[in-house]
Structures are given as structure tokens and as C-alpha cells.
Length: 131
Image (tube, rainbow, N blue to C red; front, side, top):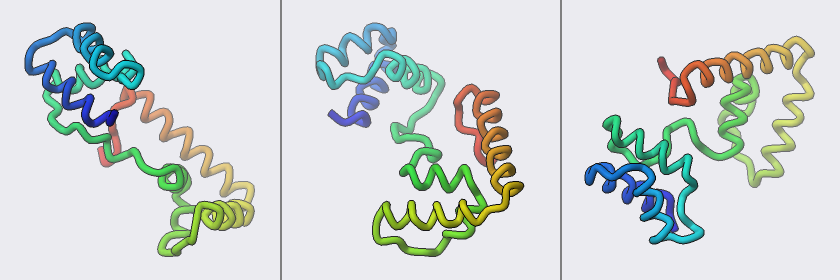
């Protein structure tokens, strides 16, 4: 079953003032093995209780290549605007661009990644882009 469908159910349970443990049990009863994991249920219950109304994923999610490009802005700039036939072509071109980076450039990419990870940890995993 769709996680979006289950998020709607969680949101409904919040409106009914159900405890997260009750919500989890109802999801398990309704969806069986396809029910969301406990931590996800508790996290979504908390988000809705704090006033969130959107059931969609946060904007930072995306395909794997979008996440890689966000981690390596220079790589993103080099490949921006190009159309690729498939994932293999993306990997081939990204690998070529990474190999062309100087040692210092590559080091800078990882320093930027480290800083992004620190921001994420400091934000408690909440969305922080643009702040």
C-alpha cells in the first residue's frame, strides 16, 4: 500500500487525538506487513500534531542522481542542461567529470558534504535548505 495513503490515515488519527501506539496498531491491522515502520509512524504523527498539513515528502527527496548532484555542486554545474539516455550514461559522464577534478577540488566537495551533514544533524534531520 502507498505510504501517502498511510500518512492520510495517520493524519486522521491525529485529528481523532489517537496516541501514536494506537495509530501504529491500527495501521498494522489494516495494512499487515505493508504497514509503515514504528519510527516512521511516530515521526509523521509528531509532524501532524505540530501542525503539518502536507502528506508529501519534503522537497529534499528525489532520485539518487538528484541527491548526488546536490552533494557535489560543481558536478551539477558541469552536467546541467545535458540530456542523458539512461542511468548508465549519467554515471559515465559523472565519473568522467569527477576524474577531471583536481585533488583540491575533490577535497572541497567532501568538505562541503561534511558541512551539509553537520547542518542536517544540527537541524535534527528537519528540512533546512534556504534558511
